[in-house]
Image 1: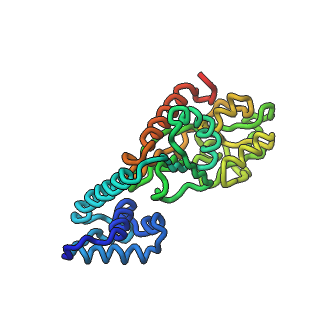
Image 2: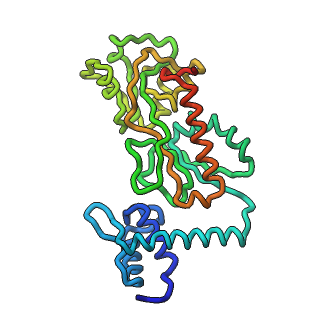
Length: 299
C-alpha cells in the first residue's frame, strides 16, 4: 500500500461512483468518460492496495473496504468545504434547485414569494427542464422529481402522490358517452395515462386516439383554449381549477402511479439554506394537501 495520500480527483471520482453505484452515473456528474472513471478507480484501488467495488454485470457493489472508506472520504470533503467557507467567508448564499418545467411554473413559482419572505438573504438558482434526469447531479442541491418509483442509490423521500382526472375548458360540452370521440391530450411516457384512468373506471376504451406531448405545459395550453381534454392532477391543475380556467367534467379519478420525490444532495446538511428549503417545501405540500379536496377544489 502506498502511504502517500491519493490524489483528490481520484477520491472525488470514488465518492461519485459510490453514490451512484455506477461508473456511468459518476461520469455524468463529473463530466468525464466512463473509461476515465474506471481508470481512476483502478488507480485508487492500486494506490490503496484494496478493492473498493465488486463489478457486477448490471451495477457496482461496494466491498467492505469501500464501505469503510466512503464515510471517511465524505467527512474529508465536508471538512474541506467548511474550512474553505471559513477562510473565504460566505458573502452570498446560493441554493441550486431542479424541478420539471410544468411543476416549477404551475406549483412552485406561485408559492416562491413566501419562501423569499422567510429567507431574503438566500440566492436561488432554478433549473427547470422538460425531462427528468436519470440521476442526481453534483451541481444540484435540491431536486423535486416526478417519477414512477423512488429513485435508488440517492437520498430521496416521497413528497406527494396525486390522483389523475379529466379536465377541460369551462363550457366544453362532454359526457362519458362522448368522451372517447373528443380530442384527448396526454403527456408522453407516463403510466398514468388515459387508458390507465379508463380501466380504473371500468370504461370500454377501444380505438381511442390520443395526442401526446413531451410536457404538461403544451397539453394545458391546448385544453385551456378549448381544444379538448387532458388528464390533470392537483399539483398542476388545482390553481387553474380554483381560478375557473379549467373544469372537471366528471368526478372520477384514479391514483397516479407516478409521484413527486424530494432529492437532497449528499452534502445538504452543509449547504446553507438547503434544509430550510426542504422543510418549507414539505410544509407547503402538507398545507396544500389539507386545503385541497380530491376534486381539486378548496375545502
